[in-house]
Image (cartoon, rainbow, N blue to C red; front, side, top):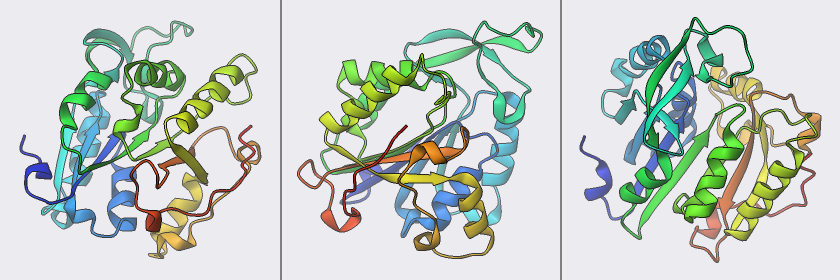
Length: 248
């Protein structure tokens, strides 16, 4: 693979963890000014989802985009991991809590923290990461906190799962505080249903509804957006005013 990061004064990378059918990348390309400048890297280990993603992103309108689809599981180590496939958007790391083991296979996993640190080697690299890993996002993000690699991205869009489960509440609070300590501001929340509507109507991102109370939003397809503060390195022009957010 040849990335654009060696060709531009400022190097832009968008990483989508959980491609499914490529919809999120379509949204990113449409809503992001100068998205053609980005290296777009997505991970999709489910064979059926991989083909869906590849089919959508191989359309002629994306021919000039630098898009890479990696058929591996993003995780906290290199090696094999049990993965439940053939479940559409619900495919994911096997949680050992379901009786259905017929669709569980061993797939290749990569240590994303290490991979990211090897990828981002230039000071003028801007990285935007979307994370959809239901049930495993807290364990995944803890590894980046420990490795001090969370700050290698300038923006994180995180889907927090099981928000109504009191047993995961402390983990969510801890990681939200870690984002803050690493220099990120949570600028609000969005819901995929609303983004789809704006996308289909061909309206600008300014028309996407930004919410400030996560507890009022559905448990799925809701994203929290964390952006590096100006004093950490992000341009102030790209940031919205900070607000006090009710995250649970």
